[in-house]
Amino acid sequence: MSGRLAVVGLGPGDPRWLTPEAEAALGSAAALYGYGPYLDRIPQRSGQVRHASDNREEGARAAAALRHAAGGAEVAVVSGGDPGVFAMAAAVCAEIETGPPEWRDIELAVIPGITAMLAVAAQVGAPLGHDFCALSLSDNLKPWEAIERRLDAAAGAGFVIALYNPVSRARPWQLAAAFERLGRHLPATAPVIFGRAVGRIGERIAVTRLSAARETAAEIGADMATLVIVGSPETRVIERAGRRPLVYTPRAAAGANL
Amino acid sequence: MSGRLAVVGLGPGDPRWLTPEAEAALGSAAALYGYGPYLDRIPQRSGQVRHASDNREEGARAAAALRHAAGGAEVAVVSGGDPGVFAMAAAVCAEIETGPPEWRDIELAVIPGITAMLAVAAQVGAPLGHDFCALSLSDNLKPWEAIERRLDAAAGAGFVIALYNPVSRARPWQLAAAFERLGRHLPATAPVIFGRAVGRIGERIAVTRLSAARETAAEIGADMATLVIVGSPETRVIERAGRRPLVYTPRAAAGANL
Image (cartoon, rainbow over all chains, first blue to last red; front, side, top):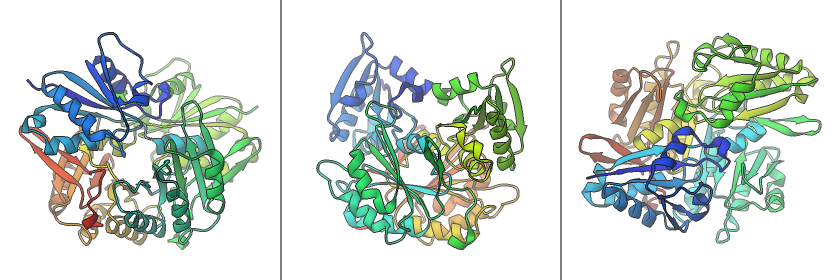
């Protein structure tokens, strides 16, 4: 009597970015599991139970939802952005791998969403217009040396870099250290974009250069709700009178820079 | 008298992944510009003009749409997936940079969409659950040596790798060459996922290993509508009786592999 578990991507938070598939999954679930602030974005429905948990309890949340679905229910785990990008889908898979064999019989549906880097990029043009990486700056789950190695590899090979989880109260210095590290490979003029709470209350967007990125991070109050994009040497900035500049990375690479 | 230009991400093609923002932009545009097969996915509206063009004419298409919008109209350029990922948003920005100064006064809106790697990843679990890269295998616009360098850097540093534009009629050998190159850094057992036409007619999904990836590519008919994800040494496969295996990359990295 196995049920169904949907891992639902809510996108950045604005309903204009919630897909019809996600909307349908939220409507048909008997129970929703998620980090409290994500659940708060979803309209209440009568008869639908909500289980809010802290954002550090992903494994326990995934296991609780799987236990519930294994009993035959239709259950949804909600995730900000896309559930497959630094979010709940991997936590659910990890619990399935190590949990009771019957969890493998649950019908699992991962429902994609607009991840933060796509929403932030769209606000300024097309900074992800050519090869890019997505990298979490959190060293809670991997050593800082691995992050440095990936920053070196990505910047050295000409990828644009999207930084997830740049700053938290417990990790105050990592973003400045990453900018310093990237400065070994990139020109001081490399464009840097900050998007904080894009599509939500408190949205702030800033376009700056690598040499001023540390100061801009402090000015806009970069935090866990912030996504940072660091351009490659190919990334261009177009100034516009009375409008935010456009930033884009051309599809054609200049051979000289490779 | 400047108009508005929306660069609209249609997602992979299935209406369940079309965002409300994209739907609204398609509804209010006086004219749609795009690659023919993308325009064919959009319901006809009376009074709305369509300008179909070939998929190699991105610059000319962007310029035509900008000229139209500069006259005061509301115009939409459509793009598969997300318009900022190997798609039309960068082409529009490039035309704005080099075009007449009044094009900078056009209100430009880039409307994000579900890009192929998110849709494919969702079908198999969470292969993009930790640090990853998106890389175009097309050497029409950059030298093959730059692609090799990026494959080396990404695989060597432990990124999962999403390959866009893996194969076309004019580029038959690049995907096999990329697998060979990645095999210098990755174990033969590294998981490889193929998603062809996900969310559309002709959808095919396959999960294999790097050592068999070349054969699987031939079997499923990998083409320009195919997205390939190559796992890192951390990426795991969970077998399930009677179901497709799950593939995921854990959020916590094993220190030994870094």
